[in-house]
Image 1 (tube, one colour):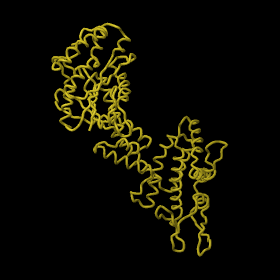
Image 2 (cartoon, one colour; image 1 turned 180 degrees about the vertical axis):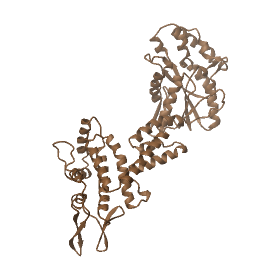
Image 3 (tube, one colour; image 1 turned 45 degrees about the vertical axis):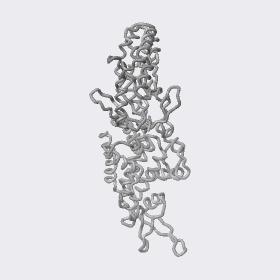
Image 4 (cartoon, one colour; image 1 turned 135 degrees about the vertical axis):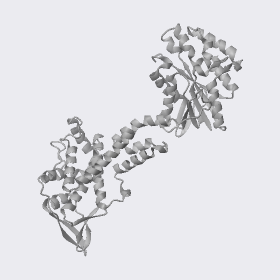
Length: 492
């Protein structure tokens, strides 16, 4: 196993004769001053490495070797360089002494020699601070923007493999990355940690280490809490659009403590997909549940302008609601059997096979219709009856459903139900998309506007549900789904 440890080289990482190493570069006021003192340090210290120590690197290395004795460790040490950044501001002055002398790049040769002595595989990763960054290595936004392309250049992800590309060397395949995020400026250590969390969210094998003076052991941590806090806003947005499957995907790999959330989202994901067969509901209850789910979920499709999916869901809900209305109007003639309506014919159960259009325009409108049946190799006609609908609004519903769903003046697509075959058989979603998107724009993107064709359809569905005397049941079920979603949002 090969592990890559990445960290920034900070001032507290460097000791010379027991004191902070940056003190050996004190009183420098231009680039030439720094280079001269760096040369003196290299000449003096590389041959006297007993005077030098990089305690945090040593502590992390020794701790990791104890934890994973059979693992090969590579250290990618990020060395800051603010020379160009300072040159843009001043060629000489206190800024060189107060800022530039603290960079890690001045220690690359000494660090390389020390690591070789300690049998630590060291690879420098140079971080040049761009002149346009406002506050140099202390700039929070600037370091976040700098760290990402820097590490994306030296760490490569190919399929499920991770590769480290050292400077001027062949790339090395590695098994895991550990980020030590207690060194360097707060802006740098945070930028490194943020990059790591982003990779962790993407499923990369990565963990984190924080070195404390009080704790000699550097036990890696997963960063799960911060991953979770970053995922919560994403999960919220996915739940808002009822993409429960996407929310579940974000929860993959999280600890058992989130299992109740996974269970709730799985329930909602199956529900919104109308996958409710495992609930073992009676035929009638199953139908009512599906209508309730359609009413609860339909607006999310409207909000995303997924009109074909919205329409097919609504069309199915209309048919089921009309079947329930026929059951009520049939005075016991029609009954449910495995989600189908049947009726008694000469002492035998016969499946109702007439179209939904005939149910509306004949059975429910006129109170009678005929169904053909083959008996003894002959076609016979069966008379069906029901109490016809006498409600005053029925005629308007009849027009909406069978003859004129008004999507656009001058464009005749027929009734609401007419569009179903066109969509279902030829997948012509562009028909309804174009018309309803246009109408949405005309109504200032308000899909619930009373004049929006989709809202008109929703109101007619509620009308049929009311006629079928199932409004209390449907309302209770849709509210239960909304409450379940709200409970999840409140607990995130």
